[in-house]
Each structure stands twice: as C-alpha cells, then as structure tokens.
Image (cartoon, rainbow, N blue to C red; front, side, top):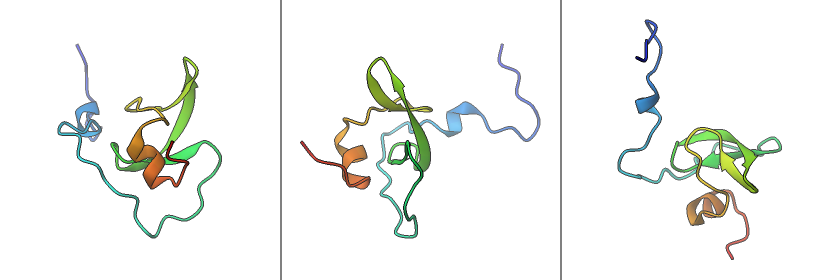
Length: 77
C-alpha cells in the first residue's frame, strides 16, 4: 500500500508513459558535475553510477542512450 501525503506528487507523474523526448531548453547553461539533462524526465537530474554505468537517478536511463548524448553534447559514438 502506497500512502500519498496531501500535496505530494505521485511517482507516476515523473514516468514518461509514451517515451516522448523533451529537448534541452536554450536557457539552461552549464550544469554542475554529474548533473545532466534527462530527455525522458524532462528535467535536470543527477546521474549516478549503477552497475558500471551512469544512469538517471529517477528513470534509470543510461548515459549511453542516443538522446542523452545528443542533448548533453556528449560524443555520439
């Protein structure tokens, strides 16, 4: 049973049901270390190392994903 407090946003709000990619807005400048734009969450998220890969702490998408690399201007290999 998942009890939700009044005013608390449910976890379903954060999950992208249809995998819509959200491009990085132009107003976002340089981000702190280990923070990247997550195109699936549509927010700046911290990417932590999990089983040898850096992943978004909420949706667990890897840094090796094409769109994560594209919107964070990382090498597309």
